[in-house]
Every structure is written in structure tokens, then in C-alpha cells.
Length: 379
Image 1 (cartoon, rainbow, N blue to C red):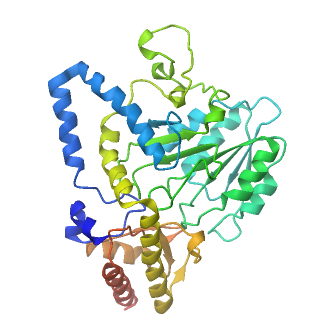
Image 2 (tube, rainbow, N blue to C red; image 1 turned 90 degrees about the vertical axis):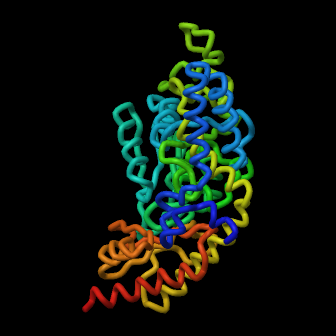
Image 3 (cartoon, rainbow, N blue to C red; image 1 turned 60 degrees about the vertical axis):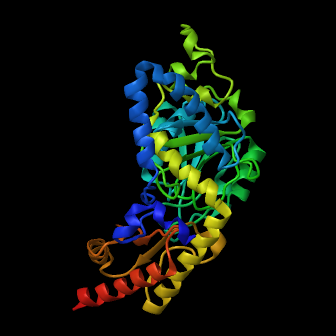
């Protein structure tokens, strides 16, 4: 794994454990920036003869990383944008106005669903008993015959806890509700297979463990659902034949029906470098390495008597470890000043997100620095 370190220039200047926020930018993005500039300068408007086919191929490529069949994935700018697009395809005026969500979803997801209450959606927010995880059994219990959609996070943003989707999907399937999974906190460090896991809709950004760009996200929809979902928020690229310039909307038969206007190109060019690295290293290998590194952090936390606000069991945690202790915010600031990249959130404490290219020695040095800075602050 350490042979990949040369691909990430930021590792030359410190210890980078911020991959849960922004994955270490790969060296190859410079070539993709140059490629885009060259195509723009050389081809002008004719660049779309290159860009549009590439965007469609790129959607299928990132889809393969989550086991999605060709034609079931579309690219856009953010998880929230794509979530609204899916929500607009649901009918909240009928017999299924309820949307089951959790109290640990990322705030942006909650804001989106709150907005749809103006149009008839009824939110059912399942609480967390400990602020770390949400019980899949309680989520399943909240799903009933009036539920149209279940919107859950595969890994929670505040603790990295993984959700066991099986009971949730099983219950949703039994009553005819669709399950929408936000995989942003897991994609790139936790293997996902939308077909094997029977996921209806999966949405994720690519800037975190996927080593991508901030303006790149994707949506994958179960093929059997595509004909049923007709989103309201669409643009000309959602048409079956966008270049026919017809006045009447005829939805594309595939995931392109969730497209808006002229597609983004540059953010996906940048993000595709990270996708290539994930393909080369392999998500199973990345997952194994991640568990080793996060396990090392937890061992150190026990030695230092720090509260671990992330599930201990390997099958229950994603790629981040959250540590809570007095002075965590101040320690985070000091670590960043020392060149040790980490982050702080009030609900999470100090967050460490190692990736496959990090070393055990880096973990040891970072945890040692935490111990030293706690002592200095206490003095």
C-alpha cells in the first residue's frame, strides 16, 4: 500500500488524516486539468463531441465501483442536488406520504426532506439512543404501509457508524417503499454492491475517501425502478434524445432521466483520477487496510484513556474514528498547525480519517502528538 504514497503530494508535507473530509488529492489531477484546458482551447464548442460521451462513460465507470449495471448511474454536482431530484419523482399526495429518516443523517439531507413537507411529505425521524448509531431494527419498525421512501446513511457523518441495511431494506420491500442510501461517508473505503445489497437508490459524493472533487457526485437507481420514477427537476439532457431539441419531454430510458442541463465536465475529470486509484488498489484491499489503521487508533485511544465515539466492531464502523475528550477542539487546531491533518466537530470530537496509503508509523506519531498536546493544554 505504501508504494502509492508518491501519488499524493500532500503526504510530503505532513501526516494527512483528513480523508473523511477531503481525500488526499492525487497527483494525476494536474494532467486532467491540463487535458480539459487543452480541449477547451483547441476545440471550443466542438469539445462536446469529446465531453458528452466521456460523461456518460464516466457515469458507468463510477457505477461499476458500487456494482451498478450500465445505464443506471448519472453524474451531478452534489448529494443534495441528486436527492432533490429523486424526491421530485415521488408522489406525496397519495397513500404513501411518509419518508422515514434518521436523526444522524447529514443536516443537508434533513433540510432537503423538510422542504418536501411543503408538498405533502410526512417525515418520520428515528432517533439515536447514543448519538453514535441508529438502530436498524428501530428504522424497520418505523416503516409501514404509508411509507413511500426510506432515506438513510450507510455511514453516519458524526461517528462513522455503519448501518446494517438488511432489515431496513427487507421491511421496506415488504410494504412497497423504496430505500435511498446516502453513501458519501462510506464510498471509497467500504465495499458496496447495489445489486447484491438490493439497494433501490444510492447517492454519493466523491470528495472524501473516493479521492475525488468537491463538485462531483453520482446517483445510481435500480434498473427496475427507472420507468416508475419521473423526476420534476430535469433539464434538456434528461430527454431521450437531447439533441433533437423537442418541446415535449420524453424521459430518457436510463438514469439520464435524472439529468439537468448541460453536464459538468471538469469536476468529474478531476474526480476520475481517484476512481482509477480505487479500481487499481481494490476496495476490498482498501477496506482491510482501513480497518487495520482505525484499529490502531482505537488501541492508542484505550492506552490514552480517550472516549471512542465510533463503533468498535469492524463490521460496524466505516473509515473514521472520533475521539472525545476535554480540549479536543484546541488539540485539533494544534495538530493542524503541526502538519497533522485532522478535523473537529462538536458532536464528534476530534476526527481521524486515515486511508490505505497512510502508515502505522503515521498513526503512532499522530496519537503521540495528541497525548503531548493534551498535556500542554492541561498545563
